Length: 268
Image: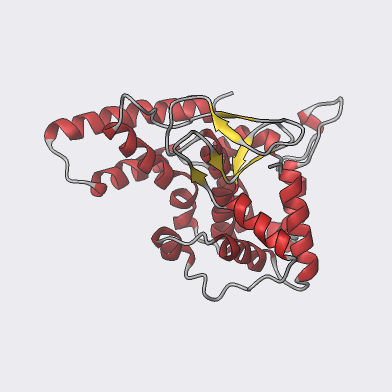
């Protein structure tokens, strides 16, 4: 699964559904893939009013498979694409963040892209410390030139490296969509400009700002780490009744985990 194939599918859908705005296409893609939870309803509303996208059945089938994120018991991860810069991106959190920005829903930006996935992963790790890691499980593709199967190489976590990377992209693109003319573009044009840029000999200094190669730099400039951590702590605390020893362990995991998150995903 490669980002260029997903972009081609989006272009095909846009051609078959002329006149739709970027927000309409994003919601329609979510509807095709069945990406609707209590969390998305809370921040983005119901999908019942989303357009039923007209497209070739093979395109619809592909889109549904490539967007819907799944973790298997045998270490396979679906809903992930390989990008030109070599990163692995889960599409669902990227699209959710983009939709939050297009709807100017700043409250939903953090939970839809990162914090809720990190909360679920940290809680899972507390219960399964010997058989999991807090977050960031990485993987490898069966074939780089024609990637089909993405398999984990680490112990499992619910917030995998691809989920976090997709969440960061969703946070960045959503932030841009909420405060710039990004929403005037087509979705395929936005994804091409963000994921398909290849720097020339002059390097990134001469490249556009909003590209995937600048992910860490842009994320650091846009995110409030203090707000993100406070949301993590609040969400974890209300998720379960904690005794004193569990609360202490939870505090340790959150502090250690958040410091590691910043170091791994937001430092140079």
